[in-house]
Image (cartoon, rainbow, N blue to C red):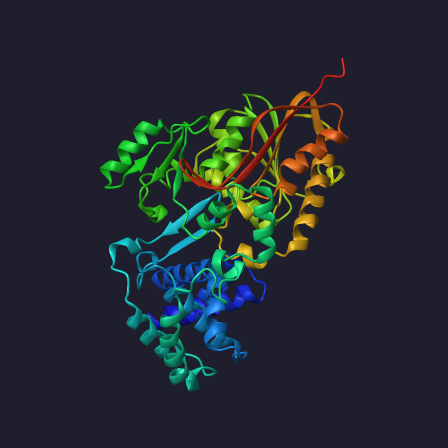
Length: 456
């Protein structure tokens, strides 16, 4: 386990340096020659450390107010302290782990619930051993042992303790907390608290393969169980009772099923793209929503993304699911002059770049990577995208605006501003703001649906 702790500390260091966990993990795993089990364990430990980073910082400051050098030592201490102050029942067990490659495409997870959680003394001992794995921390084994044992007596601080800053209590940056509190005065604490819990694994059954009931039977025959949400727009959704590697899902490679959160599954249902319709999926990678539309109808889809590597995944997704081909283009959706053929679209899906504040359960690094100023910059980009794509919609057509965010600047405020700017836009029924939740299991999302008034 000490090897996994050191790997998790290295991952935390990457995040604190401004790198995403999704980018750092494969790079460090390749450089270190990590096995799949090591990679999963490092991911699980770093996830839990990031979920408790605010609390860990406060506890470290309390027991050792002076700055700790080198950075590699501080990172190991933060990971260890975060785990020490996490309820034992929720700690990833040695050798266990979870890996979310993308919130909308795939999830690989081991099953740590099969192993008992490790006790405190094991964690302290393993952290001390982890010191020996790095030249810059070998000297600090006695210091780490003494400090972590002191943390054990400090970890349950009272709400009025000097340690009890908002960041320490809620494990989010103070600016993030302030935005969520202002937006949801009755629910802000629940929204923040839910981010400490790992997200469930939700599946979408390929409608061209068969029914949800058929696939549920396959799951149970394979020793897996799932719940079928009873909610509008989720006719093909199943929520697994425990996460498993996608390779353990029956007929996954044959295209029977995909991994996609229930909130994301609403997009294709809301857009109602019918057979023969010209559809634009702007910012489409990695292709989950594109694929869902093609599962439901033989529409003519142009899937657009400005990232060539991510755009390639759209084709991979469609091929695995045995779906009709979509046209895939690498281009900036804000510059239609570089890619549009002049023919209007009947439907446009804009799943816009955003803060991703609604999916922090799946990506706990997001809250520490984002800055307060990012929200205004992202909102400006969303506005630019909406205004660039609206002229491409045929009269009578629909545009669905979506973000995986809980911040109103990227949701309700953006939709209201769009209606003020475009007199030919009519707001249709849509969910609006969806907050993260357990019943049904869902990520935070925002949806607004607009129809273009006919000029006749």
